[in-house]
Length: 278
Ligand code: XBP
Image (cartoon, helix red, strand yellow):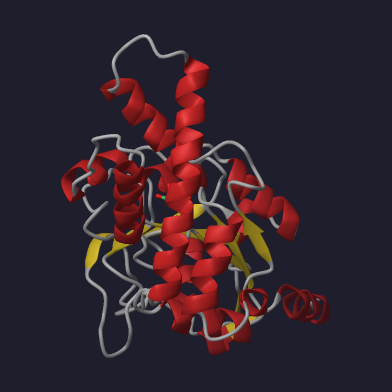
């Protein structure tokens, strides 16, 4: 089998619902903040499932307030109210991360370690805040965040939230890579859209809050990255005979055919081989 130049140079991860199942922590934090502010609001899991169609907690609160407060509130007042409640919600969320036992989703640490060993670029593109990401990964990762992620794009980096492609475009620019060299791993329709509109192919890992989302255009939809001893369930797309997500499968999603990682050569070696062949 001729050696094949690998296409995959980077993996860009979403955070909430992708690296870890954090959305239930977020939902509880929203509700505790609503109680503290005596808003009379409570987001059930079913309601939160719908609300996850809005990226960004502050935007989620403001949209809900516009629909549930008595009319006549000035837009600036609604914006300030959402901002104040969201700041308190974020403090409560981070306390939950610090006092809970949040873990990375199945297969995430295995894939991070494999990608790092293979010299791939690894990035993050999220609609949540840098502080939230740092708090989550300080408690869920086995090493400092910077040991894995060379780029972390958050709501503090770019203003526009998903489905805007801004976060992925910023991450690509920071890594100086072209979209065709990267793949995004996401969990929501907005995240899938944001990555696709950035020119990236996408792998979706679903969970109860978002499995009903429209993932049109995704290369593969599975219920988790999976492990050799706990394979994923394929919900849509071509898994190329894989039972769990590894860098060889991610490369196959970019190239259309699977090559064992041992068959990979990097671009420089491939160029040298081509020169020799002339
Ligand atoms: C998920 C979001 C966030 C979280 C809540 O971001 O949309 O809004 O639900 O976090 P992503 P905040 O999927 O891009 O990681 O309250 O900090 O927004």
